[in-house]
Every structure is written in C-alpha cells, then in structure tokens.
Length: 116
Image (cartoon, rainbow, N blue to C red; front, side, top):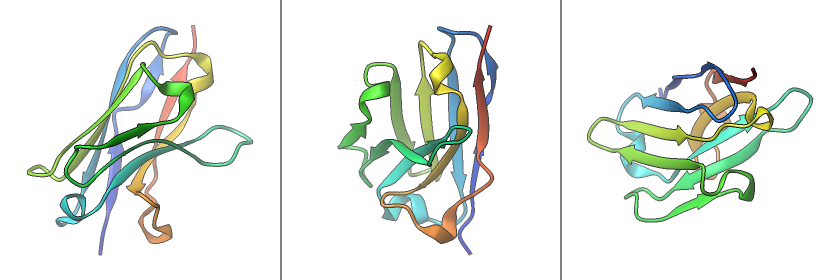
C-alpha cells in the first residue's frame, strides 16, 4: 500500500522560508509525476507545483512562481518543496500526491501558517 507522509510545516513569519518533504513508501516516486497541493480554510484543494518523474519538467501556479521550488530525489523516494518569501495567503495544509492526483494517496498533510 502506498503511503505519502508530508513534513516540514510550521509557523513562519511573512517573507520567511520553509522546506517541505514528502516521503513515499515503496518506489512510487520514481514511477510518477508528483505534485504539491494545498488547501486553505474554506477553499478547495489546489495544485501548487508539479514535477515530472525524472525532474526535468516543472510547473508552478502563478501565485507561487519565483518563490517556490519543487524537486525530487528518486533514490530517497522523497519529494521536496522549498518555499521562500512566504505570504499570509500561503497559509494552508500542504499535501503531496501523484500528478494527476490519486484519491487513494492523500495523506494527512502538513500545516503551514504564515503570520507575524
């Protein structure tokens, strides 16, 4: 059974940085394109960034372009999201999943709160 476990969230001040990690059981990461998603209170879950299976191609939603960087290490079955210049509107629970997402792979997510 595939398990994705997110970590690295926390409380950070505006313009601060966080690095999220997503550890996958098995070898799922090396086989699929992956994505980071987020869900803010009262909002729908949205795609933040995605990366091809080999890390060559990436995509970012306009709201995070130039501030977030998605990367992966298939040898460690780990996905990363480096978040810089954080804004209050980045506050959300962040999830990793395949891209497109698989309903069976949603984990607990990691909370990111940007506040002074």
